[in-house]
Image 1 (cartoon, rainbow, N blue to C red):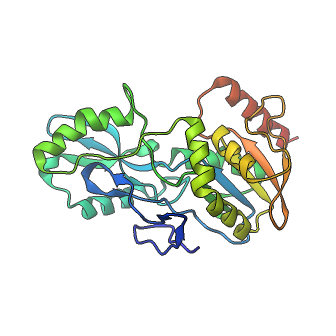
Image 2 (image 1 turned 60 degrees about the vertical axis):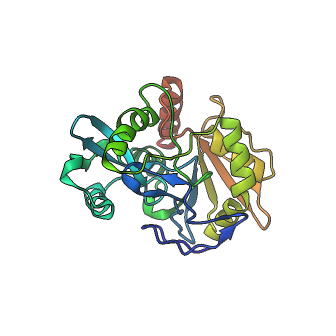
Image 3 (image 1 turned 30 degrees about the vertical axis):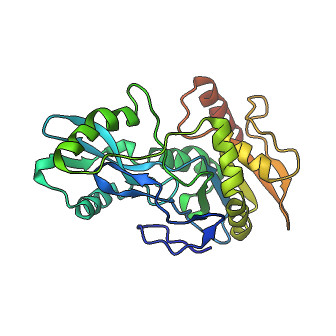
Length: 276
């Protein structure tokens, strides 16, 4: 499968019943939500498996509302580090035909590419790797929205959608984040073959899973006793698992977005262990 790692023109083959590039929703201001293509690198030092992609965010100051970080497009590839957010926001403004009556749309700053920067600094750098030496992919390659008070979904429903109705813009239509067991089930069923193909074509000797859900997906797709949940006592341990044509090491780590102090401490101890 060959995909562009940027833009919305897909050159990908179909996977099961779902065609890569097929839209699954609409972001605020009208950009479609479709598959976030992996950043492919044959001969990669490692494959990094996340859960699902993040988004390009803007700081929106509307006529009567303000949202500090509003998701308006999918990120260009998994674990984008946000380095070119200014150019991407400007391009996005052109794509949606931004109008002065809608207010101001500016880069959201540190919220763009935050997971990519944590991956770069807290996972890859301690391993002697960089973002340019790894294959980046997600278990479910679609942006999902958290719902509830204070969430991105609430901001879209309560502040963007009423504005959209007044100005003839499309309401947001984005999938809710699935429950963990459902996300794992969908990833294995709908994306399992794609993920195995990617790992195989990468030729990488190492698979890094980020978060329990990514680990559980990898455990379901491989053989060799890979656990389906992270464990603090064994944090940072590598496991060897079997692929159809070779074996590969798996390094299960926490997701860059986790905020638990105990897992943060476990990860810090792992980094320290690499330096000794």
